Every structure is written in structure tokens, then in C-alpha cells.
Amino acid sequence: MEIAGSVISLDHYIGGERVSSPSVFQVHSPLKWEEVLAEMSAGDHEISDLAVASASDAFQDWASLGPQERASFLYRLADLIDREVSNIARVECTDMAMRHESLFNRVIPRGARNFRAYADLASAYEGRTWESNGTTNLIQRLPAGPTVVITPWNAPFMLATWKIAPALAAGNTVILKPAEWAPLSSSILADLVDEAGFPPGVFNVVQGIGGEVGSFLTKDPRVRRISFTGSTETARKIGIEAAKNVVPFTAELGGKGALVVLEDADVEQAAATAAGQYDDSGQVCLAATRLIVSDKISEHFLECFHQNVDGHILGDSFDDETTITPLIHPDHLQRVESFIDRALENGDEIIRGGRRLNDQQLFYEPTLVKPASNNSEIVQREVFGPVLTFQTFQDEQEAVKLANSTEYGLSATLFTGSKEKAEIIGSALRAGTVWVNCFLVRDLTAPFGGLGISGLGREGGDYALDFHSDLKTLQIKKADES
Ligand code: NAD
Image 1 (cartoon, rainbow, N blue to C red):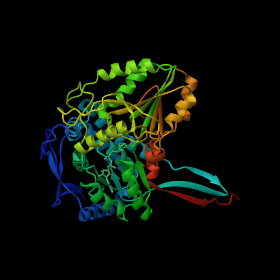
Image 2: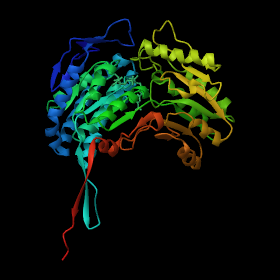
Image 3: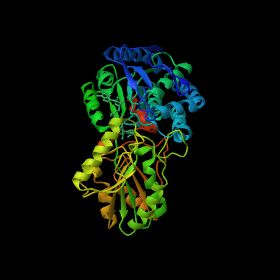
Image 4: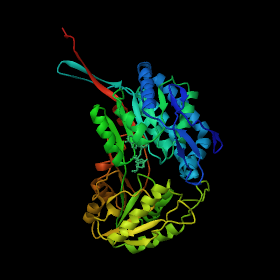
């Protein structure tokens, strides 16, 4: 079927073949919700079984290739992604309405970078060796087995490649289950894997509803790793299935990032970064959604913040000027609305926004809430929409206490003019990633993940390769010197 100028298969990709299902699920574009964009094959128990069998059959041969040989496939795939950036960005923009400018220039090219980074890392790996107790210890990484990768609907292409690349580089075979709200770019990825010449069964895509086919995949005892990105609620369900089969499981989950602005900060820069949290309607796990500002500068901060938000443009995701895009789905819009309804009932004060825009179907106004207390739901729970909270503090101790006061711990952002405070307060903030005087800067070799209910395990660099491997110690007695 042709979608946004690209021919896209609506079927699963299993064992190097397209496989259809009798039942389908509908995909809509947030840009034109009233139309059905596509009807994709919806997986069931049989499809899950077929995909896991295919990944299991392909595993031994793929695992027995050397890391350099596997890397050559990953490099080829990266080159094909580079060739197709424009098509993938167009399709993904249509499918889930993230800004096209951002998809085309940064998010989709990152997919190619993910494969290159892991091809490099896996090829360069040398197991640690040391001597102790009259023996030589050799640490080896063994491929773990068929791996299920489950992804969410925001930035689905980039997030899928970020998880698939280390799995394939480590010698595992993969079954990808993309989110049912944005599955199209995964189908393009299957075509590119095919064109890159990967052996059949090394990479498979199964489409469908999470609670149905996703759940069958995670229950299958032949699966030896589960790599999940999505909500904490779903992670709890998958974690139970992983535990039953004693399968290692990583979970990259939601966040409620703090943006702390100290008295000595560059207020204009901090306010511009804060206003930027509305980009893509705040549907970003790393978004810094709790603004926590020194009371000495809070007035000036709010002035600059409002000026920046006034400059936002709600509009068509394909328009380069647009900063705020529609929300992904009417159910999600309803969810965002219900948070604000409950905030009002709770006595929280809406400083700006707080309404959906009826004339433009899935848009919600950029919203700022002053909570009645730090215990307000709007402070404590992830909204995943264009909603920020505003709180002030008197001293740095209070700032850290507020910043660390939710169950989440994915990321935090700090603005300060002091090098000393950058380290001291930055270290005190409880989050998997803390940015100081910058935001969303990423080094792919650094560990990435959340504390608390924001996640389990780490992605990035060698940390992901370790997760996708069974680490083994080979201990050999040293020959007598005499
Ligand atoms: P979700 O948990 O609803 O769905 C994620 C995936 O899980 C989908 O593919 C879905 O089909 C599947 N799924 C649902 N139920 C399942 C089940 N019982 N068994 C197996 N699979 C199942 O999340 P979402 O709404 O798609 O994504 C938004 C969430 O993802 C937010 O909380 C956001 O913060 C988080 N997120 C985190 C990161 C990160 O890196 N930490 C990145 C992006 C998004």
C-alpha cells in the first residue's frame, strides 16, 4: 500500500517472508484522524509462535558468526537507512505526527548511527583477562538467544533501532513488536533488513495489539531476552512473564523530569529550555516537566518563559515552523484532559492553557500548572502531554528535595552559573541522566536508563551488549613454571 509516498507492506515479516493474518487493526494519522490510514495484519498466538520459532531456528548460525561478520550486516543496514531517511521521516510524521523537521534532521538519522555505533562497539570488544589464584580468568560474552523487542509509539523508528542494534551485534536474533498506534516505520525497517541481506529469521517484525500478540511473545520460554520501552504499567505485566521464564528484562519507562533553576543561572537560557518542553506536545519520556525555580528569580523566569511559549506554533507536523504537534490519539488527548480536570478539582491553579483546541482536532494548549501541593497528582504522575508544573524554592536543599520527590527517576536538568554547584547539586539529583546547562545531549556509549519506576537495567554502550549476552568466566589453571 502507498502511504506518504512510500510503498509499505501491511503484513508481518517472519523468517525473511511477509506473512499476513486474517484479522487486522486500523492505523490513523493524528494529522487526519477521520481517515483510516492503513489496516495492518494483527498478530495472534499462532503468529507469535511462528516468529519465535523462526528467530530460534536462525539463532545458532547468527550467533556463530564473528562480531566483525555480524557488523558488516549492521553497516550495510545503516547505509540503507541513510539512503531512506527522507521516506522514513515522511511516513513516521504521517503515522505519529512528530515534527518532520526533527525526524528528518535528527531522529531518523540517529537510527543509522545506532547500527554503526553497535557494529563498532561489538567488533572492538575484548573480554577482560586477568590472573589470580594461580589461574587465568577470561571473561567471554556469549550470545543469549532470541530476543523480543517491544517499543512505544513516540519516535518508534529511532527507539526500535536503539534496542535492535545491540541485540543483533551481540549475536541475538530479534522479534520486534512495534506499538499499534505507530507501526509503519517498523515495516520499512523490515524491508531494509531484507535488502541488507540478513539471513532469514535473524530479524522479524510482528504487528498487533500489545495485550494480545505482545503478551504471547513475552510468555514464550524460547525467548531469552526481553527489551521493553513503554509505560511503567505495561512493564509490570511484562516483568511478571519474564520472571516466570527467568528471562533478563530491561525496561525504559516514563519520567517526570525536574528542571531546576538556581539563582545564579542564565535565566533566559533556562526559560527557553523550559518552554521547549512543549515541543511535540510534550510526548517525550525525557521531558523536564516539573519547573522548580529559585524564588529570587521566579518572576523574571516566568516572564521569559511566557515570551518563549507565546512564540510556539501549533500546526501541521510537516510545516518546518511548527513546534507543537497534535497528540497521537483521541484516547491520549482524553487522558491529558482528565489530568487537568482532576488538577482543578484538587485546587491546583492553571497559570496558562488548560484546554483542548476544538477547531484543531488533537491539539491541547501548552499548559502550566501551579500545584496546590507537591503531593498533587499533576506533580507526581507522568502526563506525557503539553503540561508542565511550576514550583519555587527558597534554598538549594529544598530544590533537591522537590526534584527528588517523585517515584520516577529518568532524567533531570539543572541550570546554574556555578561550576561547583553543577557538580554538587548535579550529583544530588536522583535520575539516570542529569543534564547541567544543556538538554537532550546524548553520547551513545554512556549508560542510559531510569531509576525508581522509570526503569530497570541500562541501555547504551557496552551496558546494552552485556545485557544481550550471557557473561561467562573461563578459568584456566596456569601451567607450572618449572
Ligand atoms: P505502552 O506501555 O502502552 O506500550 C508500549 C508497548 O508495549 C506497545 O508496543 C504495546 O503494544 C506493548 N504492550 C502493551 N501491553 C502489553 C503486554 N501486556 N504485553 C506485551 N506488550 C504490551 O506505552 P506507550 O503508550 O506506547 O508509550 C508511552 C510510554 O513510554 C510513556 O510512559 C513514555 O514515557 C514511555 N517511554 C519511555 C522511553 C524511555 O526511553 N525511557 C522512551 C519512549 C517512551
